[in-house]
Image (cartoon, rainbow, N blue to C red):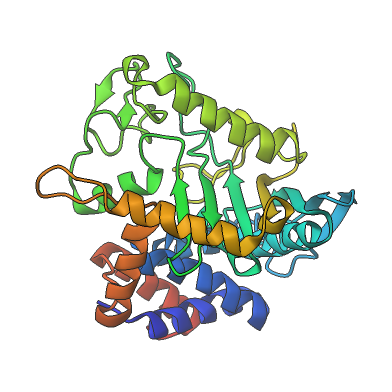
Length: 355
């Protein structure tokens, strides 16, 4: 176990070592540690070596000039200048919040960015402003659409954060695939098989091989197969890709550049610029009084939590498991797998930073 404070300090120092400003390093570290605290280990400090690899390959600009390149009163397109998505994402979300403050809703498409961490972090930024936040991003092509052998989509997550009065915010944050690729990485590190339904092999057959995607196979859309609704997961992933890529002017589909842990470092870019995201902020009082809405959200949340559950289980509201995990890990610390710990120590040795 490593407590969040020293892990955050180490992460900040690594980002500074590759040239990030103090402010950007602190923000990037906060996004990664937030993932670990919430139990999303696949998107926490385990990703830190990947960002350094992007820097090493000249694909990451540590001092980007992030800017709005097109806008209307309620919309904007942001160019991230190949910066850390961990920094570009919050920057763009703040633009969406300011647009919503003035126009009721704000919508921001981002191009020329990189991997932005957990989508929920960005969506939650709107909640403190009595707004509903939305965040989505596409990713490297690791996913085969229903009936396809070709990998054409990423895990393409969606997050929606909704404020309440006395209850914690509602936060739905999920990939449009059966599972995020990071979960395969976790099982690879443990030397364990994956459950059937997560991936297919190079011939399109179900597999439990954690390395299947790296060996020519593909992740499966949410639903896993046609009989269990994979066409719906495929549709969700396609929507995210179009909003994040086609609408923003980023690359899209099989041309989305990969993150460093995808198993390959280059992509046939050319239909757009870099990686894309899409953010939204909706002012609650653009629809009804915010206090009334939040009180009714409390009622909604409490009723769902009190639902009669099957024996030995309880009904959760989206966001509950992560919030409970965060409370636990703030006290007990964050478990870091030995393989991840070794990779962090190697970074520390390279940059003269002690974990």
